[in-house]
Amino acid sequence: MKHAQKGFGLIEMLISLVIGLVLLLGVSGILISMTRTSDLRQKMADVQGGQRMAMVLLGNSLRYAGAFPYSASSTPATIFPAAGAFGVGQSIVGTGANANVDTVSLRFVASATQTASQGCSADLVAGISYINVFSVTDGYLTCVESVTTAGGVAQKTVKLIPGLSGMDILYGVDFTGGGSVTQYLTASEISTTPNLWDNVKTAKVTLIFINPLAKEKGQPATVSVTQTIPHAIGL
Image 1 (spheres, helix red, strand yellow):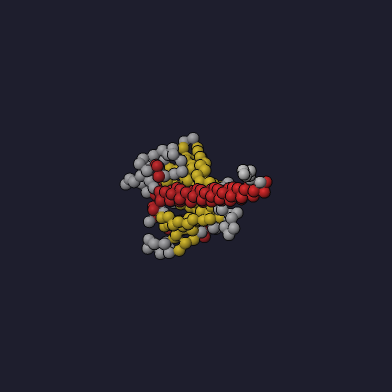
Image 2 (image 1 turned 90 degrees about the vertical axis):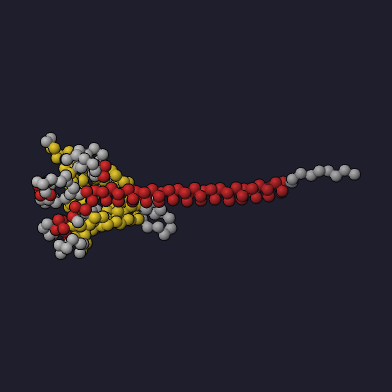
């Protein structure tokens, strides 16, 4: 006697579809989670890369502030006359009281061999004196580079690093003349004492970046990085 062959019934098919749908949703959830995690890691890596590059740019500029080609007749006073906020021979001056809106202005003479490490633009002319003003403007670490020529003052604004919300700078000052930092002050505090900028030995720079993970639970709105950079000419 032959038995009739039976296929899947409607109930079995529905159960199979439900199981398949659950598995598909599970796999999709894992893929979405992995993609999201990868995206967040990439965003954080971008911020960390920006932090490193910003500190390199500021570090080079602070170290080379006051640099000029040496000669028997050249002194900081003759190379850097009083101009604007700068006193005679002064190569660094800042503004701000650590309220996330600090700026720093630096003077230097472009070198024939070190121009790649100087300034915030790629078209420096050796032997020419430049001023770089660093600030955080419109979400960027920004540098305004100016040079005085026979035709007047030429300025160039360079947006260096995106994703910032502020910058604070404390300046290490030598009050005793011993060559070492004895106190850290804001630019506003230094500017109350004449010629105190000449005693600046270091700059403790804090850059505040917008946190790309700010919407995640427990994450702050911003992340910051701090580095102490020697003002080499002042050492």
